Amino acid sequence: MPRHQALIPLSQEHHHTLVLALRLKKGGPTTHKDLWPTDLVRQVERTMEYCDKEILPHFAQEEATIFVKARTLETARPLIDRLLVDHASLREMMDHLAGIRELSKDLIREHLRRLGEKLESHIRTEERELFPMLETGLSEQDWAELAQTGHSRPR
Image (cartoon, rainbow, N blue to C red; front, top):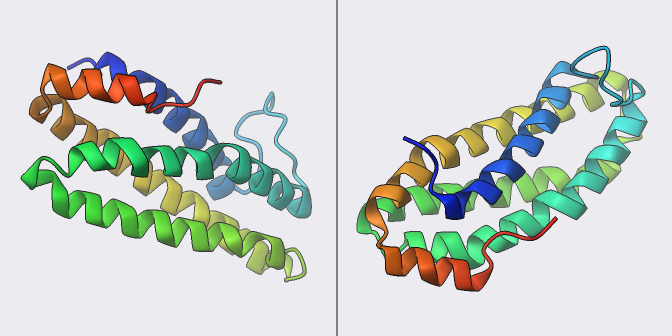
């Protein structure tokens, strides 16, 4: 089933973050053409920049719009609770990024890998569980209201 048009911008943002997650899990560039740094400290810095600029605003938008609308579906409430816990856990992991630059390379790699795994798992849950639930459960009126809120940030 194709993604509802109102969710496409969020799915596109998810795609970009999945690329980051793959880089973090792999510990470096994903292909020979990927410009992701190989230096661990630079990877931490780039990750922090991306989190501040993209992920944290994305979370705020989801929490203020999509999650609020999803809570109107009784069946979605436990999933939303789980996703909010994920957001809190991911924020905490992101907050710790600044302090890990002083750790050993192995510990830096491990933190980045765990962050990548958590990001991927979270995004897959939204894409595979939440979005289909919304697509079948929300009315056209609900979608129109979401469109009015500008639930996805312009790039």
